[in-house]
Length: 215
Image 1: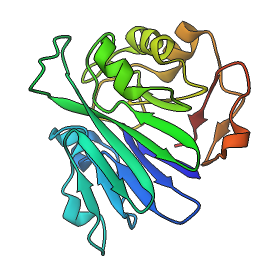
Image 2 (image 1 turned 90 degrees about the vertical axis):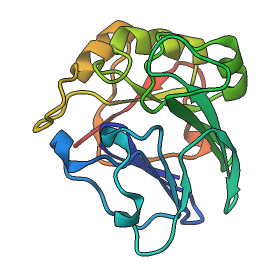
Image 3 (image 1 turned 90 degrees about the horizontal axis):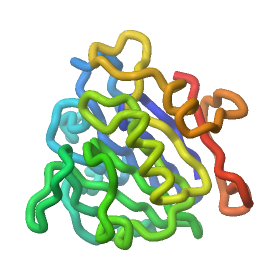
């Protein structure tokens, strides 16, 4: 599969079968240019402007839109939406945001979206399960900061970590720099990349690794 990062919590995830999922398209008011790639699936963590631009702008086709917890399967990609909160308290029947777990090509990816909880509870961890690739916010302000991010990474124990929602040039949202997370977790990326091409056999066999995109 191929993973491309557009900034904040927005990624393009493309399977070998050319099925494309886009996460959290943001509004231009945050200072970054929103992407408009063709998509088969759109996921939205919440209804906030920073991760919920108008879906109709995104694609010439009619993508399948996921904006709430639940179980979904689209074109061979299984997606589980798990309720979460921007704050620390999680109520059983309400949520402010959602985490999404994608399962395809023998791998599991977890996108934590606009998570604000300093740690995940047992029910969330059980629902998430074993994760190969974790996309975790690290910049604070609207989401968890780098310290809470490092703690949640240790809770989930993925094989590959992709930080998101950190400071980028021209951003109008005040966020921490990505280097603070790398220092906190004690791991640095080997190099910055334009796009991640990954298969199950490419996953780190032992020690966890981190990824940083050029953007």
